[in-house]
Amino acid sequence: MLCVSTESVSGNLEQKLEAIAAAGFHGVELSVSEVIGDATQVAKQCDALGIKICTLSIAQGAFNQDAIAGHVRLARELGAPVLTLDITADQMSDLPDLDALRDVKLALRPAPFCEAEVVALVQECDHPCLGLVLNSAYVLSNGSRPARLRHILGCHIFHIQLADGNKGDLVPGLGILNLQGFLRVIVRSGYVGPICVSGAANGSNDTGNAYRAFLNLLDEVSKTEPHANFGNPFLAPRVPATGIEFIEFCVDTKSAQKLTHLLSTMAFRKERSHVSKDVSLWRQGAVNIVINQDHDGHAGQLFKKHGPMVCDMGLRVQNADETVARANALGTKTVSQDVGLGELKIPAIRGVGGSLLHFIDEQSDLHRVWDIEFEPTKRARATPPAGLRRIDHIAQTMKFDEMQDWLLYYISTFEMEKSPVVNVNDPSGVVLSQAIESPEGEVRLNLNGAHGQDSFAGSFVADKLGAGLQHLAFATDDIFETSAVLDVNGFTRLSVPASYYAETQEQFDLDKSFVADLKSHNILYDQDAAGVYFQLYSETLFDGFFFEIVQRRNGYAGYGARNVPVRLAAQTELKYTTERAST
Image (cartoon, rainbow, N blue to C red; front, side, top):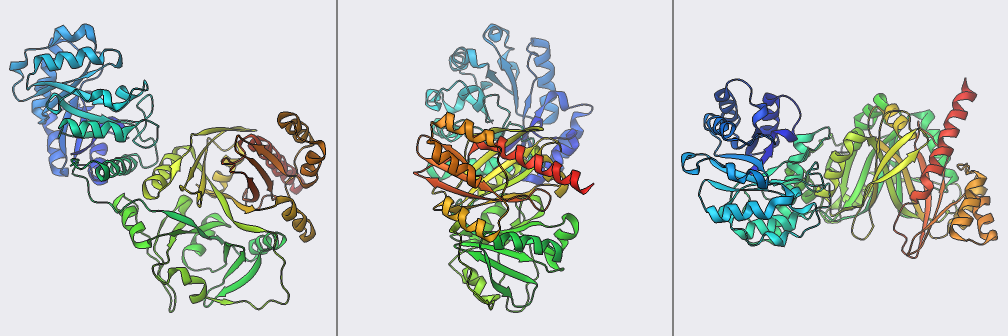
């Protein structure tokens, strides 16, 4: 049974129960402290919503004979078959008369330091009314392996709580605990009771996130454990993402001029125009930039609300229909758009900050969208390329409490793995950055969570009234050659303070002439154990959006974290300088 703790959901109890049922959960773990007033009314609401009260949980420190007796009576009124409570070694002699419990089972959740003693007590008693609560965070946070639970029989386990993170405050998938291994051991023990999400999602859609995280975990275990029977719905496999097909901007005439000028200085060229809409395709290498000036449809509506911004992203996948099917099963809604004569119906779901995420595959005509919906543009002269090959990564900036929403969305829908969260020091505050990548690195995303409005990232979020794609990084094979072409084209780059290069030379013991070359191009540098990384940035436009050009050598896998404070300081100074000049 798919269950969730009311302590993991926001709102009052009535709101929590409604949200739990709406998300798709079958059952609920109720906290005693939340049952105020008539317990039978709570039971009636749960029954009307179609959710079962799986357990009644007692707060820590409430272990005494009288309190337990009162909670047993409350459990009976609610129809809860199991009463769970924390226990320490010195409390084990205070257990009530087990035979008197009759229809209510007592489940003990041992503190991490006395797990062995409590497990031994339950095994020695071997009573049908006494069992264990196993919480994944309690069991795994000290670094222990799940296999140490193999000696526990399923009949001695009455309740399972799934929480991630060393403090047990994260839903499955957001931390680093081996929850798959934990569940496999539980399944092999013969346990067939409720499994409950007990971590707090803390996102803008906490119940939906908990359900998404839960289903994703159960699905992964079901595929590798033949005896698993969690009652979870069938999900299409996680989707391999093989690349970013396009990035689309919504603009008006004035902002289109600024964007196309900047693209021209980076040697992009206009290659195609839409057959019926004011939409154009700009291209270089495998990078497709769509500029949408159409007043109707999603792009036009988004521009009216937020101004010029990235309004759409196309992701290359193996099967677009399966991608949408998995996203829908995990709670993501499909976006339906009007399709004109001769246009393709490209599957889409809602993306970050009100934008769309379209899916392009090669199993249908979707990959021929540029030939079907666009016509070639006549060019007076050829534009020499600047060596930009593909999109290296994109950065999506959002409010901090939305990061979990989008992290769960990406890692549960696609074959992507997350890296540890990095604290980035902004001149006006801390920004949390979470990188996620497809296995081969074809798709790289950076999710940046901003606290408040003072930081550069925070001001971008505030200006856009929500999350959005803040920067787009292009990959080149030779950043110095690319930079030389950009100079010829009149590209305006972000200036880097001279002190940065002195520090970089000393930190990495670099040749002076090489550092001078970096400085002359305003190129930033980083290296790790595998290779080196080069970066240069455009100046900002559209209230904080910017382009980045990068080169990776010898398997460098990061994103230049050491350079972020320097880039942010330079962008912040440029922002203030521009604002002062305009007043």
